[in-house]
Image (cartoon, rainbow, N blue to C red; front, side):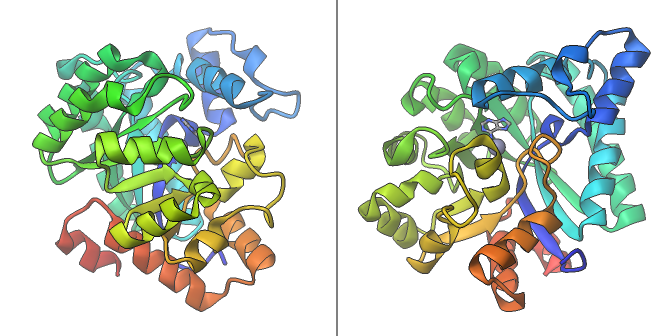
Length: 320
Ligand code: ADE
Ligand code: ZN
């Protein structure tokens, strides 16, 4: 499983930070982050909302472009070790300069340089998706969309929204998504992880994304499932994340196979791998064990992911 070449579309940059990396930075900077770790060194959280606050606490020691360069290298080494050949990462200017465009440019440059180095050394290609954070609210999303629009191009290819789906409405973020769309960015929105099928419908109607982050709760509305299939909306499924956070009690209860069987384009990603004790290899192993997926299924999933990737056609050709 480790050897299969993999394409990952849904990975949060800070959420991929190994706990040892964050602990190391906290030590260097004299910040006490002991409250976010368990005794065994892993991240400690009780539920999704607590996860978001632990995540934000971890970002508090990522304070410079150099920190992000080191993080990028660590993340890509881990991904490459699991056979990932192409990855898209969610980057949040909220954590990289606080939404200031000039500061964001410096962070982005450092991340890109580290990604270029990893591409040369490890053969893994990275592209960036700027992500606003829903629970920070629609006003906070505007400067983030401006950061995205100002740096849109061949590397920064997408705009999205993560965070607490139970806060606010997708329509609150129309300005930010229109700004990004007008800059030529492709769009993805976290929906249907917590907010049910209605949340997926609302996100589609208000923000017109190309892809949905998670989207799995669409399974509770088969008319919506058929709409997703017909419109070719791609779901960035992260089953290990959903099981770790309790969206579904077990792997066999996860709807990824039912969605796929009904014609929805599904892909597989890890979301925040060290938080959820997962890797791309582990996701594939679990999919094989739970649903009998084999080589052909993984080839189809990866072909879907390449088609749905936000990079240009020439880049897709290099990973096909
Ligand atoms: N940010 C990082 N991981 C997330 C998740 N699973 N859902 C929403 N926002 C997130
Ligand atoms: Zn996510």
